[in-house]
Image 1 (cartoon, rainbow, N blue to C red):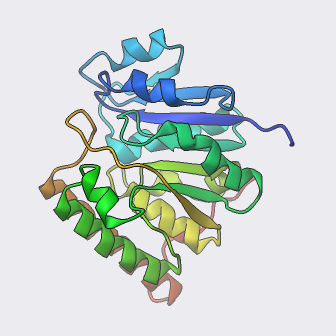
Image 2: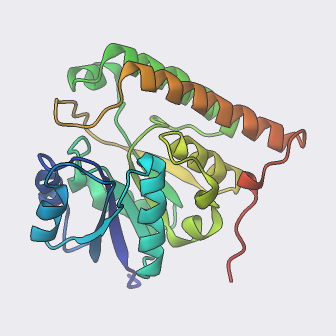
Length: 250
């Protein structure tokens, strides 16, 4: 197998109680570097990350979930990553499955691989996913699949693996600093013809795992619908958007 550099990035905010458990599950023989971007946490996230030997980048002020990811991806590219894996340090996703997601990229089957929390309804609900969140996920994922021409199981996963070319092509710097960043990114990936796939991962919902509340979920849902509408308008040449024009890679 051709040598390649795998960098794991963790967008973190108050992850002190779950970070070490997430880190311990990472297959460190596969990972070349772990970069944690701390979004002005008020707990001991940074102290724990440094004790674990992670590369730590601190935001002096909270920039939001999307703003955090922008720093994550820029840092990974600067460190020469060929493959970039983003996993939340809140232990909601099973990091032991990273080799499976990376495998689809190593075999050149996919350019983007997501960890899908919804293999089936019973499993998702028994894993603690609130029923209203499951329903919203199903509706939004179905709508995104139809609009973007995909067949993903979980459009809203926080466990993602990308090739370097994906991050060099997608103008993610222009995206939102909020949670809708993820929806924008996948719409861009589909627009540019990248191959997107997913792998089932166990569902873990517990008090320490980060999860947005009902009000913010509604805002996120409306934002996702707006992203899909903007994508359709761009594709129909009704309202071209710079967000759907690839970056120039030198």
